Amino acid sequence: MHVLIIGLGSMGKRRARLLRGLEPDTVLLGVDTAPERREQAESLGIRAFPSLTEALEAVMPDAALVCTAPVTHHTIIHQLLEAGIPVFTELNLLDTGYAENTALAKEKNVPLFLSSTMLYRKETQYMKQQVLSFREHTGKNVNYLYHIGQYLPDWHPWETYQNFFVSDKRTGGVREILGIDLPWLVDLFGDAECVHVESSRLTDLEIAYPDTITFILRHSSGTIGTMVVDVTSPKAVRHFECFGEGLHLFWEGSPKELYHYDPETKENRYVDTYGVYEHDSRYSDNIVENAYVDELADFLSMLRKGTTPRWSFEKDQKVIDLIGTIDTN
Image (cartoon, rainbow, N blue to C red):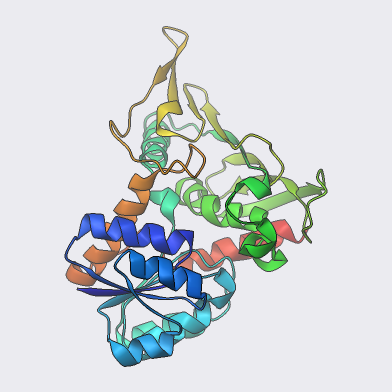
């Protein structure tokens, strides 16, 4: 199997490494405009090209992964679909080309897979199962509190944030967090029906958007969520708390920090959802490699067995509309 990876930055290299772990016989090709990234890729055994057109003229891949900055996704996806190549794309953060590309994928009967890695985290899957079971057996509801943040210069400590797409207002750091986390929240609690937003600036970061947003969501299930999203926190934080009369869950973002409160012992009971998990030391502790692997495996299953992925462009359109409501207030 030949797989073309467009964008050989940190995410492109991660996908390449994990794909090789899944299927060692896969032949990897790459595209990047930066000569140094192509050199790095070549040293890893990835045949690299300076443009997508040149890559497609040399080899017609069986599938492609789009790992470039989000603002470039729609044109790359369109070119790949026109060539009849199945596409896996990282989160887009913008809905540019959504209608056109989804229509094109259906017209050509070409698989189109949209990443939403948090849906593959075993912690979010466990919490979904617990909440749904609680509702079914008690008829009661839950609410949640959620704080996600990390100081923007620490996201990619090997490069300045001004050279990273999170400095762009259209795909900023707060917007990326929302794009990562809102899908699993609406998957669990339902679409957002009401939103109240407050924003602020707490840093001297050279960005054209608020560095902290606080908002309240009322979901279609009746659940109310209070969220704080920031690129300000000196310590990377992902603190989630879900509570109702008879259910209390706590999650600090890593597999080692998921707890289910036991009302009989009055203690938090640790929930081991992974047993063993992989972590890249360059990133904060709440980034787990296993979910990225499971997501790639789901893409391969879609290609070979026609299975339905957990996320879609249609679902993501609703989330992007919600993000627009939040980050423009």
